[in-house]
Image 1 (cartoon, rainbow, N blue to C red):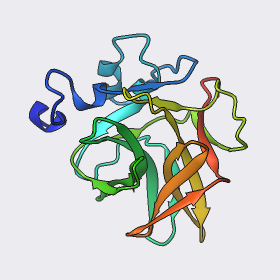
Image 2 (tube, rainbow, N blue to C red):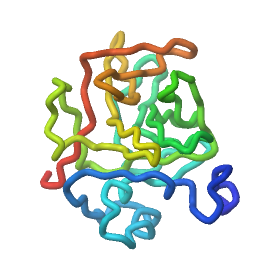
Image 3 (cartoon, rainbow, N blue to C red):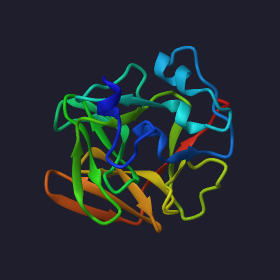
Length: 195
């Protein structure tokens, strides 16, 4: 992937995945099974969960991507992905092989991103039932420059898991092709470096 294709409009001088911040309160180590991309990004010890996001394009899913569950209706697995939008914000979604990342922005717009996205890689993440009191030590939080911080959530609908943004205690997911659904009861993405 050329460096031109990695840059977002208005983000000159920085790679598109460097525009926002990912964090958990605890350091997550780089594992030997992770790709070279993760190691290259690990130059600053303050970059915590960022080490676990691997830049991708074209519907590619890297080895070791964190699966949300088998998508029985489509016949393949789905993974946790994140995109950098033209509004200069990180937005999580469901990474589908050969498709890219699909999801819903904070403003309620549906999106499909094939060109620039990152996949969550590693086996030190897990899903935890969201009870509006998840310890901040465990939840993976995405920090946007706008100050709109959010978590990543998962919900099961008709036997299929969907991933989306948790904002103000509500999970927003893109259901099927054109429908957006909101939930108050769901699972939240957490990280455990001691597994």
